[in-house]
Image 1 (tube, rainbow, N blue to C red):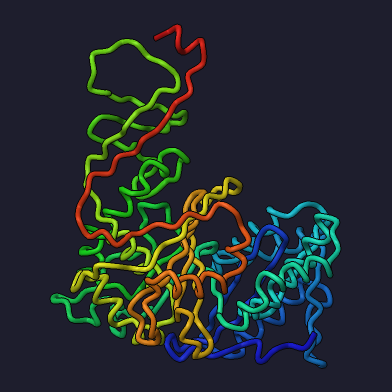
Image 2 (cartoon, rainbow, N blue to C red; image 1 turned 45 degrees about the vertical axis):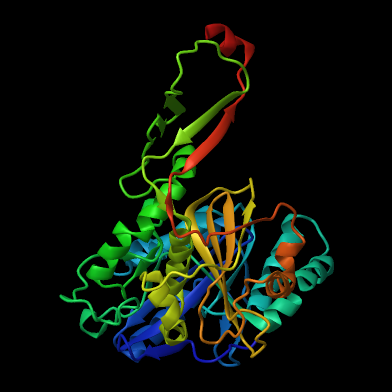
Length: 438
């Protein structure tokens, strides 16, 4: 295939030259970037690094042959290169880690660029899936086109969180806070701000463009609500947030995972008779506001998107900052997929390409543990509808066919702006042995 554009680009913000490589396997994808102050240094790296992969780049004809096989010889070549240069380029360790996830002789792709159209990325995945799962490639392509074909014409899709990414301006003197537009006083950027709350296990997404004042404000308001909302799941699935694997302590219980699950609770009665299933209402210590959960979801979205999109969300930012509280918001859809545990929370952002105002300009997925939430980002100035009515929401939802064809969707209203106690009603099936002990 032809090389799409230049292999080295100049970043005017950092005033450095950049070169990208992307590794894509059936179960893993990683981007890899190096920067250099001089063009020839970046170009030299591209020549040397690409030479590790036989036949990858034909510089004379400007073509690439990206399909590779994970052989012992190739792994040794990669490991030797990484060991030699990781002192100056620690990001090379991610390349070695990628190869450790592959099986012997597993096929993978390597590209000398980062961004690729979603439909191209899906095609690559289908090619690898056809080999691994012994399925017909054309059938997989047809199925994917049925699910995503129309959506890809309407939306640009971007995923965040699977790999480490530092978002925004690196030079502190040039930073503009996304949430106050540098109006807070004093204005400082000394703290490390996470694009998704560190308390939910985020270790990969760092946001440069959030000032210390906003970081502190959100950590004491909407982020407290969302961390409390997910606290039971965080402990249940052993997701390590800020401070490691934390116990969830409520008014009448303590739930911990160290490493086995242990629930201590007081049911408020004197009865010693226990029957199965044991029904336990767990009362949280901290009240939460449902609308703050929605606010925080949208705050995560605004933390990862390109900064040039932010002016369209000025009213959304006012809402996140609590400057107004609407009575009604669009529904949020929830799925529970008991498959792969998402210990690192991730985001998928959808940005509308055209002017079809029947559809929301911005839609987002938030993945945490086994849960997936799909929500419209409200108050965007590119939207005419608010997507609150059933008719407007149905038009939106029917466009996202990769969700509508999946069973198990539940729709929730997060409009409530009052603080309320969170009560988790759980049931425990007791075995005969456990009953006899009681």
